[in-house]
Image 1: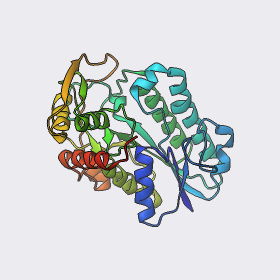
Image 2 (image 1 turned 120 degrees about the vertical axis):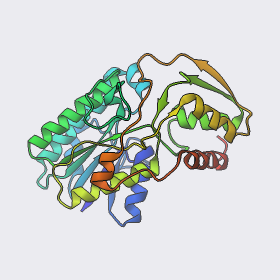
Image 3 (image 1 turned 45 degrees about the vertical axis):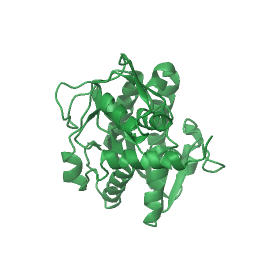
Image 4 (image 1 turned 60 degrees about the vertical axis):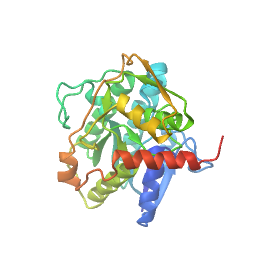
Amino acid sequence: MSILVTGSEGLVGTALRRTLAARHIEVRGLDLRADAAPERFDICDTARFASRLDGVEGIVHLAAVSRVVDGEQRPERCNAVNVEATRGLLAAALAAPQRPWVIYASSREVYGQQDHMPVAEDAPFRPMNTYARSKVAAELLCRDARAAGLRTAIVRFSSVYGNVADHATRVVPAFVAAGLRGATLRVEGTACSFDLTHVDDVADGLLRLIEQLRAGEDDLPPIHFASGAGISLGDLASRAIALGGGRGRVMVAPARTFDIHSFIGDPARAERLLGWRTTTSLDDGLARLAADFAAAPAS
């Protein structure tokens, strides 16, 4: 039996596949960016999704429109991928003879802007943008699928970083790459602060969640992967510039109106239920990313 990873070519998907392969767990991937069939697959093609479930014990559903700005620019596409494709995936899993369990990858965006930090998983939903609303809708679909008899788990990511192949405009790779070039870092709200999590820590958390489901767990609450510490965008920019020898400079711009301005997550539930905490310090994670950028071939 194998584990199916949707979005297998993305930031988290590639790290998770490495983590599972290192433990000799058979993995299948599905992603539009895969090199060839059968892994090259459009998750919106729900009519054909059932054919991918033979011999699958569980699904880690990472495929998504994963950037807030993309959701704002193309809301119909965001809804199709994040909500309707998830609906089809859950329906296929429910209809499959072996009923594979499903881990759904959600986001700290579902919390919106909370009044108190750190934020625990039972904080109310306050979605502020199209992407966040799509994640809330998909979480509710997972809840309904569980009520119908499917074993599901929800994990919420918080500002994952750590690979040079990530979206170039995401804040961490964008800042680090610009800092190394001695370029200008556009900081949209210097006081905005976020809880950054390294992708290797996220992959480890997913592995722990998978192990729980493989052992028969069927009643896990939503869990977010967060460090419990935040960093302002201004401080992050300063660290990125320092990694480049201090040659970069900052251009301050207003914060985007559809973004939250701060988030720090409470890691207590993840530690209690999964024995998980972040182990990659921010300084180490940024230094590793900078080294990978420096070693990457010039494009």
